[in-house]
Image (cartoon, rainbow, N blue to C red; front, side, top):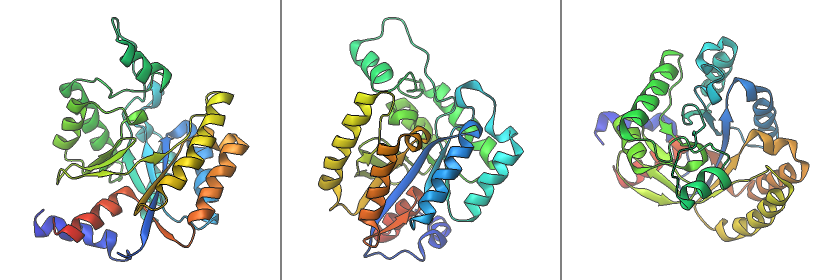
Length: 269
């Protein structure tokens, strides 16, 4: 990284305590249709001391229309960005049409693991680059400043990752990793997230995440991923609140872009 680029990141991390462990709360599937519940989530997080998070915004959620055409929605995002929240590109359509002759593995990841949402799972380079650059340019034209790209359901193929890097995005995440696209460094940081589509999924999610939290709580970075439907299930939301309370005072809430910037400064990248 050049000194000029490095200096661009300095304001993002100037207030960070290098000795404090961090936690990133990311709110996924942010779009005009989910604004109300997303706003409730943000407010409740703030009431519990979480003053920033990464907002994963879908440019055209399931072809319902460009998010950037909704002036009130964009104004709301700009206000959050000004307050220190991060805007992240989250796919483009957030859906993947089924293909003929899919393997069992393909069907597992795109239909069972996620409900036909793995948009960038096997997208070719040219189409991935087209969608990512379109999202980037639409966001920038609206006064938003995305630095990261996260594929829906974290299903990101190698060609799509190369496209994100060539589109000059700074980082991406998968379920188990956070990848600095500029330096090439990959951090093994697993996310805690929920599947709430059925009662059995919710029960397994709660049990698994309770165990996962105990296994991960010694890591320097924790990731808690929240989807809008999580808020409507009391037992799920109660566990998320419990995780917030369990980390309060021992971790500093940050965003993906700020955490990546801090790692670069530490390493002199």
